[in-house]
Image (cartoon, rainbow, N blue to C red; front, side, top):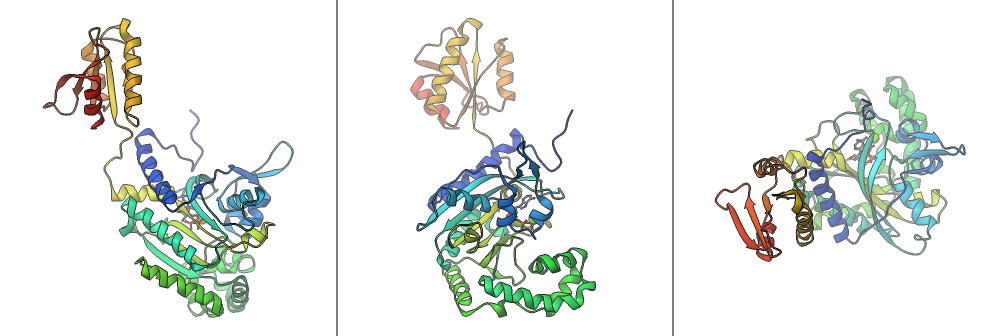
Length: 419
Ligand code: ATP
Ligand code: MG
C-alpha cells in the first residue's frame, strides 16, 4: 500500500470528535468577538509569499512546497494565511477606508522536520483585523485568545509572552546596531545564525543554541531603539492587559520569524508539549499591506496552531471526545426495511446532531442487537411489522434499569433526545 506523505497526517474517526470540538469552540469565540470567516485558496503565486512573508525567512528559504503549473507560473501551497488574507481583501477592495475583522481556518504546508506537534501539513485558525492602529485592538486579540484557552480548559497551561519591535525605523536602527555587535563574533555563532547574520539578523535573537544565547547577553537591546510613540503603544497595551487581568511576561528576545511584524509581537506558549511550545503567535504588521502593493493600512493578527491545541486539550481532558451520540435502528423483517428507513429519517429530522444508523444486511434480531451494542449506540429502536406510525419500541443499551419501552413517537423523541 502507498503510505501517507511524511509529515501529513490522517485524523481518524476516533480523533475527529476532539478536533471538531476544539475548532467549534475557537470559532464560537471568534464569532462572539464579531470576526467573520474568510475562505482563501490553498495555493497562491509564489511571489505573494516571497514578498509577504519575506525572502529571508525560514519559510520562504526552505519550507515552501513550490511547483510550476502547466503555464509555467510558480505556485506555492500556502505556508501561512496572513499574506493571502491581505491579498484577498485588497483585491476585493475591502481594505481602503474601512475596518475589517476576519478569521480563516484550514491547512498550511511547510517542509519541516516532522515530530510531535510539528507537521508538514498542519492546521491554523487565524484572526486578522485591519484599519485599527491602536493598542486597543492588540489587547482585544489577546483577550480573544485567552477566552479560547479558557473555553477549552487549557488556560492554566499556557503563558503569554509579549514584546515590541517598535516602528519599522526602530527595527532598522536596531538591526544595524545588532550587526555591529555580532559581526566581530561571527565565528562563535552557530551555523544557522551565521547565515542569518546577513539575511535576517533579528532571527538570531530567538536561536535555541545555548552558546549563541550566551553571546547575546551583552548585545544591544531592541527596546533601547523604540521611540516614544512605540513605547506609549506598548505601555497602553500592558495597562489594558492588566485591567483585563490577563497575565503576561515580557520577553525581549521574542522577534517572530516573519519579516513583516512591527510594534506588538506575542506568543502563547506551553511547557507541556516539549520543544513545540508555541500554540499561538501573532502581532502587528502595519507595513504589510503597503508592501504587497496596497495603501498603508494598520493590521494586527494571530494564528493558532490547532494541532498543538488539540494535543494540549487531550492532556487537559484525556477522556475521549465522542462524535455525535448514536441511535441504532433494528429491523425485524426485510419487507419493512423501507418503512424503517423512513422512520429513521423522521428521527434524524427530530434529533439534529444525533447519528441514526439503520441496521444493514438483515439477519436475526439477536445479531442486530449485538451489532447495536458494538456500535457504541446509546439507544436501539426496534422496527417491526407491528410498529405503527405513532408508536416506537426503544431500548436503552447502556442502562438495564431503563430497558425496553413502547412509546408514542413524540415521547420517544424526548426520551432519545436525552442522550
Ligand atoms: P515554530 O517556532 O514552532 O516553528 P512558527 O514561528 O514557525 O512556529 P507561526 O508561523 O507563527 O509559527 O505559526 C503560528 C502557529 O502555528 C505556531 O505557534 C504553531 O502553533 C503553529 N505551527 C507552525 N508551524 C507548525 C507545524 N509545522 N506543525 C504544527 N503547528 C505549527
Ligand atoms: Mg516554524
